[in-house]
Image (cartoon, rainbow, N blue to C red; front, top):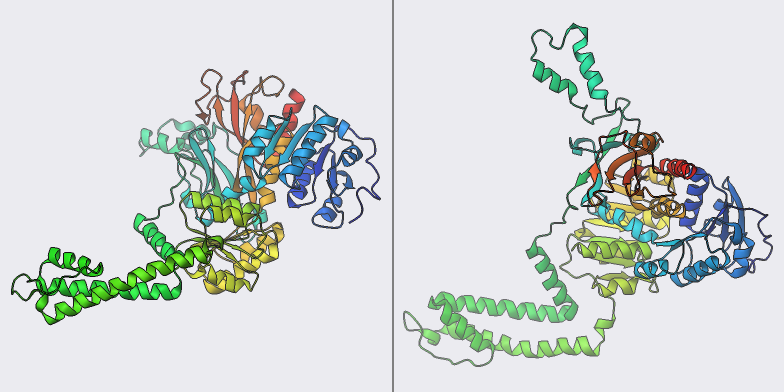
Length: 610
């Protein structure tokens, strides 16, 4: 890498541009969003023009300049003309570096729009109070729900008010759907998918009704008027697209689908994992053997005496070393004088004697050997868990989300210095830390008993290797991959079954771009590799929304109005608001579903109206 700023001329005089600081995958996607959909001039500040995604960023059409500086310093900000920029996005570096750069940018240009990536969301919320016109977002927090939901085979959802929006496909589409969001879905060719296709107008059902009856009158011979009218007026259900391929629709849920795991299975996992954590293999053999002998001897006492209470009482005394032999028994009077009962009591007594030194050995092993300071490995009772490969920012978020849902998780990381290991260990989640063969790591993570594998390392090849190794061990296991390259992901979809691919940068970049333009995105929904944005737009002075109606907003291709909140009832969402001619008034707000390009076009329209 060159020395700081060496060989990099300052940007030619330019104004009203946007600055993206970073050379990673998120920076790459964000620059694409800005130059392709928002069509604004972009200057990129990269730490090294020869590494990571910087070479590909430099080749993008529409990029005004690419400037190289090792860090975002005062000199670097002056080189990218911070004083004339409209906005800056800090999507590389750690939280501390981004905070320092954001405050420096605000010092040079008090009115600039600032969007910074923060892993620590609580810290980010506090930093927003220090910024006059800024917001802090977490790329991993934006993308993690999509990975976690894909691993659990449940729909990715975005909460709006008291409802959860999600995408349903084909036969899962209910009659109360809000709108069709995609058609021509073909797993073999994901490029055919069409997001937010042209919809029929609200009068379509009446047009079908008129065509059904024609000019001959409202009733045809041999038909009932009421039945025919209802059938003609019913909307055409979402089904297979006439041109081939499946259909996806937006629906609502009253709450997120619960992850149902029987309590007795959770109890079994906890007991077995606790036993394995506190004991070694030899101690477990001794304990299990002694316990089996005690149970067998108790059963023998009960069988010979027929008195459960007396047998339990005598067994507990023998186990504690307080046996009192030759007490008269019940029934035939043999009591403990019988040979087999005496043998049973001797067995229980000697097993009780072994429990004390075993308990002492456990305490010595735990306290003296420092087992609590080591990584917790998955226990013998780990079942139906999710194996998360890669404990970076995204992997740590996915583990935390699954753990919060009560789903057993096992982390797998090859780098012992990875930042997510300590965070995952703090949750009590087992971690396999090993730089050996991936197949061996997956075996130690008990892949054979898992429900899914989520590979979210920063390298596409490593994630694909994890998928192939997992399939070699368990052909039916569900696999969720983090892949950046779209064509690579399409080949994976066409080749492997029960595989889901997501791109962290693809999910997060639209939210960062919208935030840079001053728009709030509530969340993103995945339609395979495509992204649908859910945003809420308030009708305030200067936003350009006041005076527009539903038809005006949807006239921009790639936008659907889902709900309207009126100023007189701000807590009530009117879903599928029927009045398309009512104009928005100050205090109203609308919830829209939009494609990336649709939201960009809507932003341009609102900016022109403001």
